[in-house]
Length: 316
Image 1 (cartoon, helix red, strand yellow):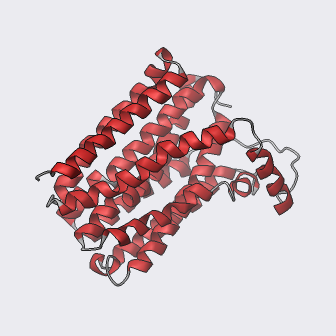
Image 2 (tube, rainbow, N blue to C red):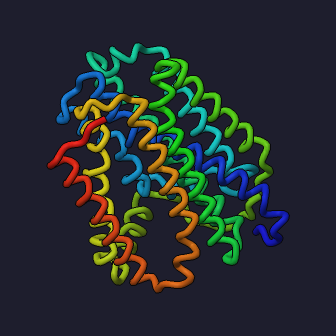
């Protein structure tokens, strides 16, 4: 495990870059694509299908045990998974860059859905390996800071994958923008490749079989209080998922340009990044229960604001 602060800095830098790489596709799918699709003339019903490619993030627990165990005990166990997933993301983006934007958001929309699904499959699998790397190498004392690095890196990736990407599409076009994203991901891959992952000690483990997996899944669902936490998490994410995904198409319908939408999203994302940085300080002063319900109330107020804007209109 990483113990000294000086020794932990290369790990923190690597984790920040890896979570940044996961935030890029998430911003592309969740924020940029709805705006680009609406700008291309797709109806809101078709835009709603853009949520389907995010399924790997919800289902990654299915193959997480295999990622954690397959290749364990060998050199660079998780690094090899991470590099393979980054290669997959780069390959998908390279193919997307070669295809006309007009075709992808028109006759080739089904191809776009498949490509976005693969993008999320690779990113979700990378997340499993990256989380495993962080959990293994960070001591309990450093995990709070590690979580801040995770959120901040992911948020920065989302900023570039959403607001900044929309601005770049307006300036550079579809192909040049995607190749810019590919260049950033290759830098992340280089950072991961140069990271020296300590050899994982070999421990006797039962083979990952379907029977073992079903037994572990049953134990997970029997945890006390799990149903309550699932309701809380659903309440947090369902509203955010339904509301945030349609904000960009709404702004397109209100005659905002992609550059203006990107600028607004950039400002909002920077505020979110600052909030992630302040979260740790807030948790030191508030109890978890107060923080949970307090911030849930603030989130509800933000959607009330969007309801007001949708009811009364907004000009570009």
